[in-house]
Image (tube, rainbow, N blue to C red; front, side, top):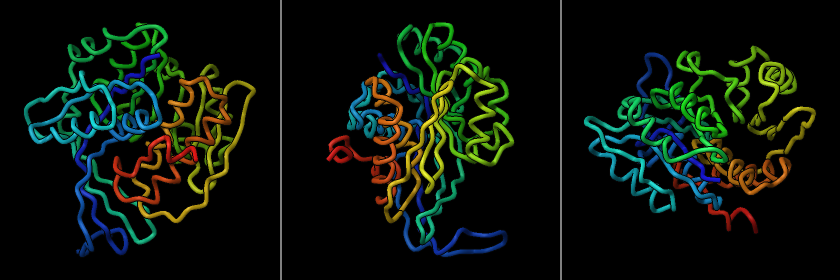
Length: 291
């Protein structure tokens, strides 16, 4: 199986603050760091560090060479990364004293995906391969339709959850990877079990992976439902925790591991990531997770 991640590439400006800034407030930051990020980049690096063979497709601006360097240095195949006029995507991230974060996202080059680029990339893949997508690039519906038409499995992390997803045919998704907020946005349910029940009604053929923060995570496919408790660690920065989980889960799934083992590996990797600063730099190597 070849894994293609058609996803975002961002420069992350991370500000350490006492608390999240509120309306009308001017707040001093204790520190500023610049990291490579974007849900797409983070998940590709997590896949590669987990041992998967992953290709990344995406667009960068004139200052985005550092993003390609970060992917390549982690073992990601970057033949489908292209530079376009303008600026790369970037985020403004506040991280408070407890390690929680809030994120302002500017799409930049990520919003310049064209039909021609989608078709060029997908022509290199086919049945038995896996496409991973998030909701931080344009033409998402075309990417999903094109991959489905080529016989690929499709894994979707529906983040950020917004109106752009309305154009996507969710019945074509093989694996949903989402947190409880996105679960509520998709189903209107707040309890984990109810979210899984409703998603099973809507998409009975799909695998559902639901992350629950400190309450761990759950998996469902058909009549199979299992859960994994969260690892107990002191969080420093939760920015890439979900992306680390996604990459490790899909890498383990591609190896043919049982759902329970996929959850366990992904949970351990995410727990390590939250003890470190930054997005991509916080993602552990497989050797650090399996000790």
